[in-house]
Picture (cartoon, one colour):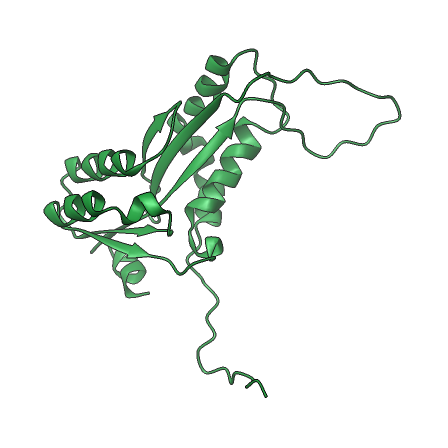
Length: 191
């Protein structure tokens, strides 16, 4: 992808965007034990949503979060936050195919702020690098961490996001842009 090469050379900002919907409740890692353990779980479906954008090379993270839903207005708010940074280079945003990201208002705002929207092919979360970031967030802020309340869970997640510099090397290895391509490979034909 030429956009990633331009980003590497400082000639473009490329953000990968996706939402994470984080439930307040027990998130356990692997557990083997001889004695049965009971873990208290939260009741209800309290959910903290983050629509995040991470820049591949600078690891800059911009977010919109709420306790309700991610929708087209959340994407518009994220685009406006990105535009407010007033980058001196072109900005491209890589998105999946969530319906709210294809809304006309999203496309209008992106055009107004001269932000290029790049949509990934369907069923290809492995190409959206922010998915790797969400996995790191879950492993550091949610898995095997007990929160007393929904507010304390939100604070734990936001604390992780505010302290991303502590995880700079881990994030760098996760955001590798060495995608495997299949150029020049002979495809089998069906009979």
